[in-house]
Image (tube, rainbow, N blue to C red; front, top):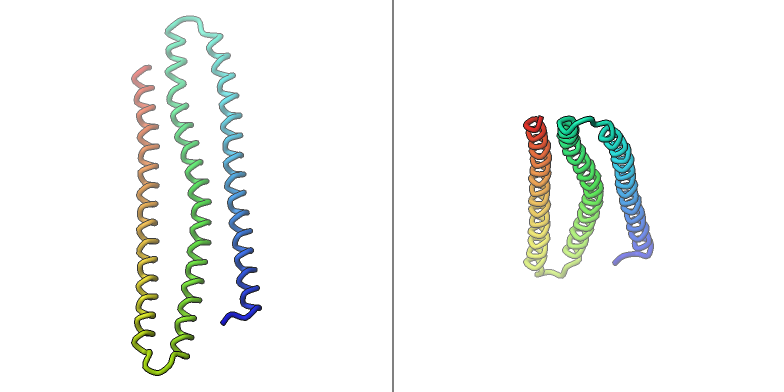
Length: 181
């Protein structure tokens, strides 16, 4: 049985975890807002510079060269923005995953202790039922660990694919810009 002190301590720990996760979520939002502000400021400055450059164009060939020179930096900036966005989301997700894994591990330990305590106080002849319960707990823990590993592997593959696509898009933009010149 849980004592009132244990219940209060558990509730306090849960509240601290909630506040910690809320703080991490707000940090992620702050980073996202900061990234968007920087991107917007840069886009405005570049638009102004490009508009000024277009106003000083003297012929069609110069206009074509100016436009061609715009695509590669634009693709690189879009890829960089996407990488920053992914890093922010990934970092925030990692913090949530760590907290979740910690709470699950804590819950597993508490449940294992509960099963051990029940086994100690079990009536004679219930050894088979206790062994089955311990086996079920071990199987559940193994299944959870397998799922965690699969999610981690899928996340790693997704990150590698994202980086490959971003690099490929930048390279295509470079090649297309080089051909137009």
